[in-house]
Image 1 (cartoon, rainbow, N blue to C red):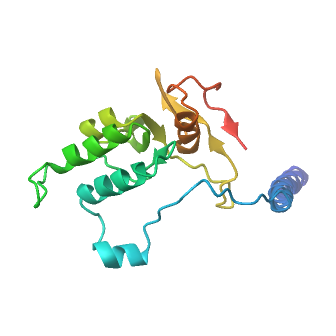
Image 2: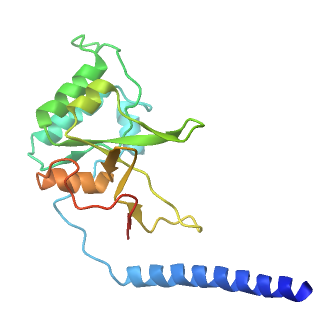
Image 3: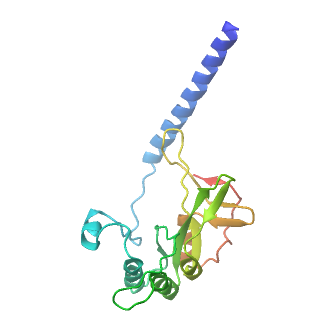
Length: 198
């Protein structure tokens, strides 16, 4: 029994060492596969300066609507908003009295190329998709998932290109943006359910 436990311990330690070595080797290889950042992708980040200028988070949806209109004026091929709008907001704009969700949905619809995220929630009976508020979801060109799977060491090295349950599947946020940019209809990309792309 002691010998068996010793062999099991050695095997487990060796397997763990192999996994860690494999991840380290992968990281080193990826560092040598660097590419110059593209100049046709713009990231509008929410940073300390933004919060100081526009106030504490969450911002009124009219701010997001104004941003989409401003971005759309530059004629981008796709706009991705990595902000969850899962709860409806019926508050009225102080300036024009338009409900918040309607203002955002109108800006998204007018742009015609906006990808918005959904997320998964554990209800105790498995995961369910939590979509954006109905007006926003209906106005978006495409819904996408933003789930990132972390490896044992807390580093993300791959993503699920498609994720869903039952008959409903969604592209990853980045793949959805690519599809909209290439004028691909939602769900027509080549994919295999549950396959991770490195």
